[in-house]
Length: 297
Length: 297
Image (cartoon, rainbow over all chains, first blue to last red; front, side):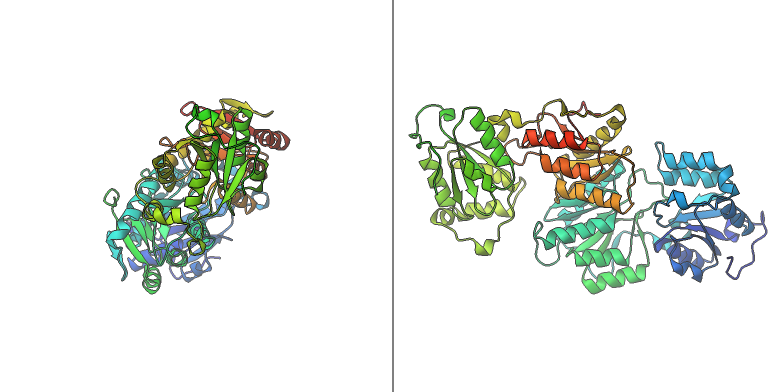
C-alpha cells in the first residue's frame, strides 16, 4: 500500500527536518492542509491514513493506509519511512471495537491502549500523544510544520466586522473562554448582544445548524445578516492535538444560518483551505476576523 | 369570558391575601400548577390566560382570556377582579406583531411597551415585571404562593443517585453555574465524568433531544442508564419570572435519552405536576434529586 515518489530516508541521518514528516491522519481537511503546507515549506511528508476515516485526497501525497488495530504495522511503516516527527490530525469516529482485528503490535501494547481508552484526567488525545512519544517519536502541532494554517490578527477576506458587531464578538468570546476552561467546547454564537448557542460534544457544525433551525422556526429572530460564531482554543489547549479549526464548510453554514461573521482566536485556531474559506466568505458577505485573546472584549 | 364562582372582592379591603391572586398565564403546566397550589393553600385565584398560549386546562379555574395587544382590557379585568398581587407564569412564543390589534390601553402605553421589547441590560421579563409594578400591582413568584412547587433537598421518588453518579452531577452543576452567570442557559448534561451538552436559547427539551440523537448516531456511547441532566437557577435569578422548571415531560425525555437521572438546585427549581413527575421517574427508573448550590460538588 506504500506509494509516493521518495525513497525511505536512512534512519539516524541528519536533522529531523531532512526526514519525512509523518502525518497520522483521521478525517476532514486538516491532514491534507498539513501535508500541503509542509510540502510547500519544502518538507517531505508521508501520510498514514486511518482506513475509513481519512479523506480520499490523501492519495495525492506519499501515503500508507492503516486500519484500526494495526498498531504494530503502523510503527513498522513509520520506522521504514525513517519518520521521527509526526503530526496527529483529523477527526475520528469512535471505532466499532467488535469489528477491530488487533495485530501483534496492538496485542503487545494492549494494556497501554486500554488505559488510553478508559480515561484519566487528561484527554484521550493527550494519551495518544504520549503513546507515540514513548515509542521515540516527536509529536508536533500542525502549526509547527505549516504556520500558514494559523489564523492571524485582523480581517481575512473582503468583509470586516462593523462597530455594532463588537458586542456580540465580545460576549461570545467570553462564553467560549468559560466553555474551554471546563473542557466543554470551542465555539459559541451570539446575536443581538447575547449568547444564544454554546457548543458541547456535538461540535460546531451542529451548533450552527441549531441556530439556523431556531431562526427558521421563529425562536430566534433577526433581519439581514447579524450575530457571530466565535471559535477559540481553551486556555489549557495542547497545541499538538484537537486544535480548533474553521474551513469553507464552516463559512457556508454560518452564512446559511444568517450570521454576519466568524471571529476566531488569532494564533490558536487553524484555517483549513484558506483560499476556499476566504472565497466562501467574500461570496456570501460573511466577515472573518482573527482577534487576540483578551483583546476581543 | 369571565367565569368562576367568586364575586370580585371590593377594592382596598383587607390584606392582599384575602384578595384573589391574579395569574397572567402563558403556555405550559406552570400557570396551572400555580393555580392549583395557591388554591390548595386557601387562596382564590383568577387566571388571565394569553390567547393562543395558555393551556386549555386553565378553564378549570376562574379565568379570563386576553389577546396579545389587549393591555388596556387586561388591566381593566385585573382591577375589576380586585387583584392586587399577580404571578406571571408560563411560556410565550414571540407574537407575530403584524397580526396584533392594539387596544386603547396598549396604544397609550406604546412607548413603554416598545422600550420593553427592544431591550437594555435586563431581560424582557424583568421589564414586564416592572411594567406591572408601575401600575400598582405586586408581582410575586410562583413559589411564594405555591411553596410545594419548589424542589427540596433530597430524593424525589423511588430511585436515588448512586455514588458513581456524583462526578457527573458535580461537573454538570459547575457548567450550569457558569452558563447562568453569563445568562446563557439553565441546564447541562454530563456523562462519564464530562459535560457533553449545554443549553443555550434552544431550551432544555432540545438539549435532551440532542443528547439522545448524539447517542443514536454513536457520537456518544454508553450502556444502560448513565449520565445526568442538571438544572439550576442562575445566581442573579429573579425569583418572580423565568424560574427553571422540570416536569413529567422532562423526565420522559431524559429517560428516552438513556440518562440515569435528573438533579436540580434545591429551593430554586420548580417541579411541575409533582405526582406525575415522580410517577414518570419511578416508572422509567430515573432518579430525581434536589441538591443545594455548592453542596453538589
